[in-house]
Amino acid sequence: MVVGDEAADRLFHALADATRRDILWRSVEGELSVSRLAEPYPMSFAAVQKHVAVLERAGLVTKARRGREQRVRTEPDAVARARQALDHLGSLWRGRVDRMAGLLAGAAESASESTHGEEGTERWA
Amino acid sequence: MGMTGVEKDFENLTVTLTAEFNAPVEDVWSLWADPRRLERWWGPPTYPATVEEHDLTPGGRVTYYMTGPEGERFRGWWGVIAVDPPNSLDFEDGFSDSDGAPAPGMPTTRGRVEISENGEGARMVIRSTFSSKEDMDRLLEMGMVEGMEGAMGQIDALLAG
Image (cartoon, rainbow over all chains, first blue to last red; front, side, top):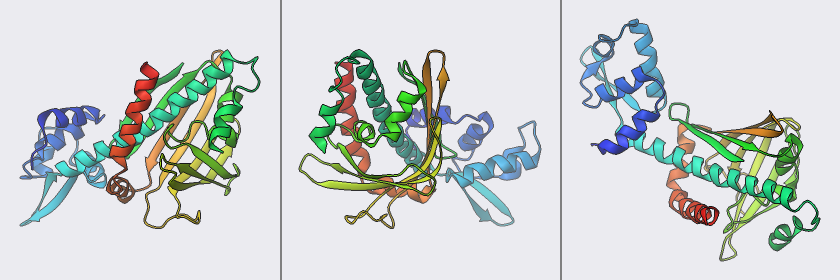
């Protein structure tokens, strides 16, 4: 399973933490254990373990036992689904906020027309 | 005036929107606290909302339905968790069955709105979080995404025009 490079770029850019973004990239093949993942970072093994746990809780990576090791693998489906779901929630609320702005601007423009605000409501009541 | 930012936090399944309005805090709060005002922004123009119950007290409920172009009704509810008028509201937001009772197995999200003074106007921050990863998956399975994006596209076009 491969995520399109552009889609992956956008998602990974959205992930605020550079280390976690890096872990996601390095775990695409699913070949690295947490200790191997931890090697290049100037932080403790426990800190890297925490980053992996955060990614795992969000469903962005899974761990699979291979012999005595846990290997970390990025879940591209989960990554794409999370993006889709949050885009949806974001556009839903964006539409609402835009309508709120319209209502507040309308109220300011037509403060003298006291009936202005009623029409839309009655139409749907 | 209007949206100033959208942030998506993929780890915490949260969207945060910030908006600034040239209106007093009380006016922005009334968009939430007055059911007739709430009806005018909750649903997209193609799915206008009608609010039935509206009790913004802790443990209180808001119930509503949205009416589609064919007259079909989609019901939903809020469960009010905490409220501090005119500055903040915490609520759970879900779908109802045709009797208005919370529908089991339907996704819920948790919302928090904060309204504060900002110069001569107000700043509003809305944080919306999927209650769990399962809730997020359920929303996608409902196939709402394409339908809602269509509606949003129309709104964007109207606003741009």
